Image 1 (cartoon, rainbow, N blue to C red):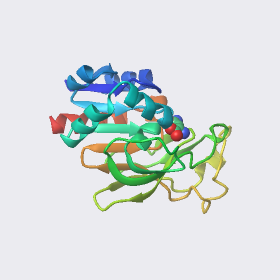
Image 2: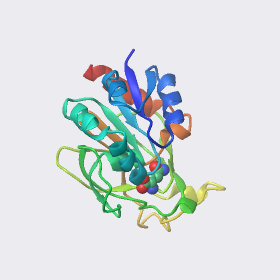
Image 3: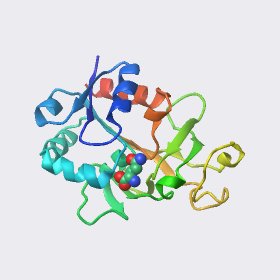
Image 4: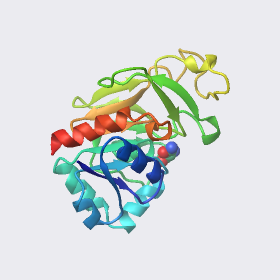
Length: 217
Ligand code: GLN
């Protein structure tokens, strides 16, 4: 059983722990370097990337995580976790810093403010079945990827218009600013999504990550 940590400095740690356990991992919160040493893979949860960045320094986790990433440890970041895995962040705070992660540029809060969170179907390459019911909460999108980055998913069209009770922002039409935006990527052992599969009870992405951790072990 792969041992997978969830970076537990801030954010929706509990939901990721539950999803990982459901996907067959031995899931543990990780706050300290010694706890990081004990895991085969790491999830960086959704939350606030500026706060997470500060806490990574305070808890002296930045260097240990960078080292593990350089050593090939698989990492999955959702939403704020995606931001923490981006080489470049637009609309970030000047002092915020991510880990040595994916060759990509993300834009923070790209889809709108908290009140404007929305949901949309997103197909993920390598994950079979129905499109994900993707939940975006002040989510980033990916503006640019490097040559080594595989795009796994995009917002295709604004299907949310036909779903009752779904709030939309930045999705005025299928040709609006969100259409076509990259919301899931992978670079080797690093995986990131703008949305939160841990909030919808769909374990397919966590299973995908658990498989990735198994393969890397
Ligand atoms: N807007 C948050 C940030 O900038 C991310 C939101 C989320 O993780 N749901 O970190």
